[in-house]
Image (cartoon, rainbow, N blue to C red):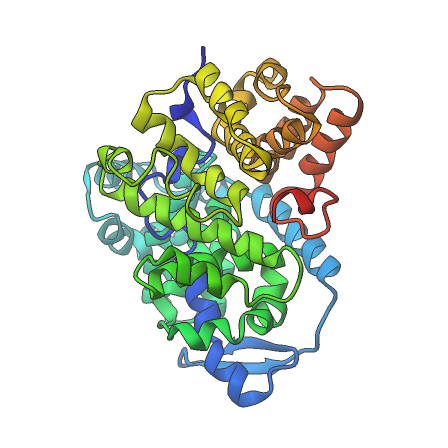
Amino acid sequence: MYSYKNRLEVETVRVLKTHVAVIILLIGLVAPVANAGFDGHDLRTHEDGRVMIEDHGAESNDYHSRAHEDHASAARRDLGAAWSAADSQLKEQFSNAYSAAKNKRFVFVKHMDKLGARAMLDFLELKNPFCHGEAHELGKAVYANNKNLNESLILCGNGCTNACMHGVVVEAFGERKYEDVVKNVDVICAQGDMASLHKLGNCAHSIGHALMLITGHDISKSLVGCERFTTSGMDYYCATGVFMEYRDALELKADSAEVASLVSPHYPCDTFTKYPAACYRYMLHEIAEAQQLNEPQLIDMCLDLTDRQQLGCFHGLGAMYARDVADHPSLLPSLCLHGGRQDQIMCIEGVIEKLADFDEERAVNVCNRLDGENKQICMAGAHGKMYRLNKPTMHLYR
């Protein structure tokens, strides 16, 4: 029996600001968007580190997605090179200091000049191939050290699934107000550096995190803000950011009893019901932990729900056990082949899309345990990964 505690995103359970750095960039762009008639611009940095905007023209979303994948592949090819080239004694000093420190940023700052950002990023990725939250402080330290946005972004690349870059941005930009964000969500996600660096859906997810922070974790108001997106599917991905931020805030308190004491065992998924897949994707683990439910009991719980709530629950089930399935691909059929056809699809996509973001080859290997239409759905998720706006199953999510 495999444990729900090993879900794919376990490395971020105590990290409140998983996507906040990306959000801050988006929010920081709002004022220039409003004042400059933003129609295809790029962020650039003066020699003194001040941010300016330059025109480079709009490009297609398909191109941006391909470019993002190409940049990611290029960034991985030299993984470990900087760490291998570093002085062995210095590496030992850094490793010991990092392991002992509560304030990781201080360790990064102390070793920045001698060890370098690339070597420290290698250290994080070699230590945990699924790293994310632990690189936020490195990104902050990188930008604080050189005060140059472009140089910092180049140093970070896509390290730790873009978390280093997120840290750069949170250090470089400030926050804006709720109305400033929601009235410009389409523009700030579709143009400029953000569109070239990230899929549109990924940007929307980050906006969801931002709205929760801006509203003081008001789920209702945040979801209303998500609805200001006009492109189909963007509201859903924004909602995933809302519920992930809610979950992270709960887990940061390290008090699972708080979940059990809420208004219902399924809160907030049975209260904010427009986006059940978004909610259960991030909250099912908390629900299971609060009620001490194992995998068979969770399957039964999902089957007891109706309509879109049931679909959302099975999607959350897949996401929750994705890491276990990655390690043991033969578990996928017993996990996901329950309920109706749509339930199975939602569970399969819950497993495979995020896994593919980390390791597409492993995701494809998992899909090979299925056959027929289930395998086709799985392979599409493995190749398309997270945040697809054009997936044929989007109508099941919203």
